[in-house]
Length: 161
Image (cartoon, rainbow, N blue to C red; front, side, top):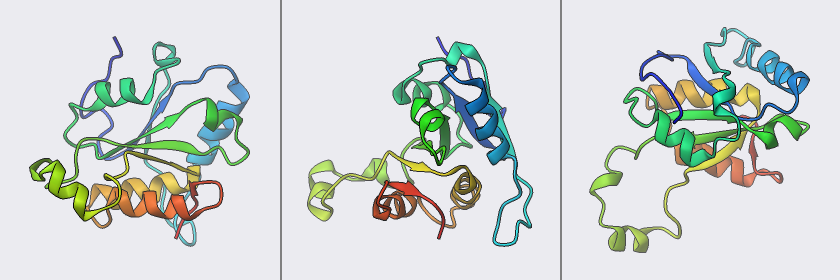
């Protein structure tokens, strides 16, 4: 069973490493995540790296099950095999829990309102992690907006607005 302590990330973006095949690739991802962000690099990154081989090979469903009890998390980022092998090191962003109000919607009615259910995941470059996390944490934007922006990219990756 995977272990995660709710609240341990605080306000930090939670990054879970699930691929341990390439240490140099992981160091590059961690370095990218540690760079200042924002339009002019005015913000210092606040991240919590969960780098424990017990998470090796964990699926998105397993990651969500482990972190789902953390009421403060709205998104978790996964550094998986795709992250480690892609040239842009895109992490998998996973929506934690339902958006406020989603749980009250009748699935039949909701299906008629939109073509597809709300997105559960999308990929983002490391520089996008901070923007996504910060805006979701303060409810300035919602997960769906980022997923739609990623879907518009030819490679399906959120790269910023």
